[in-house]
Length: 418
Image (cartoon, rainbow, N blue to C red; front, side):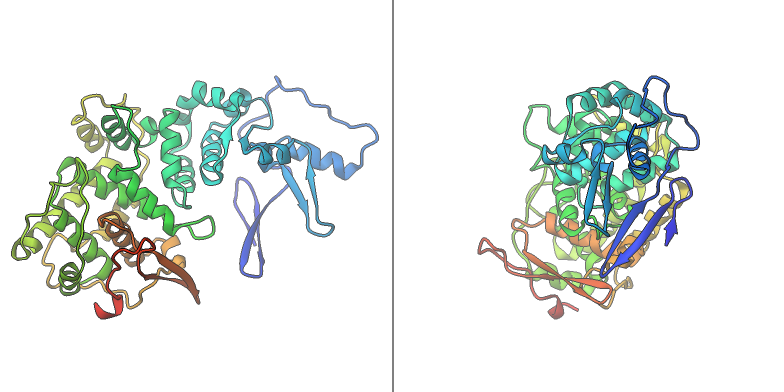
């Protein structure tokens, strides 16, 4: 199946996998190769097919993306030292990095995607070019910028990606609220691993992978939820109740779950210390949190709302004016949290299954996004994370809570709560 208007891609299904095969002659429509780079147009004595492959490899962004595989003879063709760089865990551009990124600034974000997913490092030349040209991503079309960000955040490497984006100053441009939060919390040079935002992203990454991605609405909803807590810290029991409502879909099951599950964790500045909320007041406070989360959608979707939210920080980043999300994204986020700010007794969004349906998650089904969002928050709000097994069941993957490997507590069987 051939997809893609700008760069034609062939999706080839082999057994249970889908392999993306890029076509030859993939030159951007809007730009010509810089005259500053001179290539030999002919290789004397070379095979015609070799010349075609060599020419095409020179149009690729990074060397590890410039490899060709022939499934008929099991040969890998490497004209750009991609195998060498792969063995060194290095991300290097095919042509000089400054020229490559000036030609297409989106390559900077694709470099982050590769480095974060594979645990690679940038070559010194590539790293220097990113620092010099990081601000050029502002010129990328908004829709394409969001597409690249989704590739970065939705495939199981959101945590490492955020760290890399912050290291190179791009988080200030793309996610300024989160950049300001991290700068505020890490003033003393401490590790970010105990911060609530990074815990949430780590637990999200545990559920996703390159072949099991999520829709952008999931990581956007997670950021919206977290920003609401930064702006207005909440009692830990209220946060757990909100997460359980997303996960289970009814108030009755939520209360039963909260009665059975014990130890909790707290985060600064997001939580208000040891829980003091009584069950009698819990419903009202959970609805209030839902309304705060709804209001925080503006921190990602509205220019004015984002500017207002940044004002709370003592040293906010210089605002670039970039707002990634569209009106459609805003509507999707509103649907995810719809109904939680009203009568929770009548709220009923049960899914009818226990596992994650990754097909539905990839396509942004609100019920699936809501379920996984609740799970990520619950996993973050307990002292020890339950170990889980993931298995395929038709189009779905079942995620079953089990005992903690360290010998700790386990969540009660979900079947007893439905």
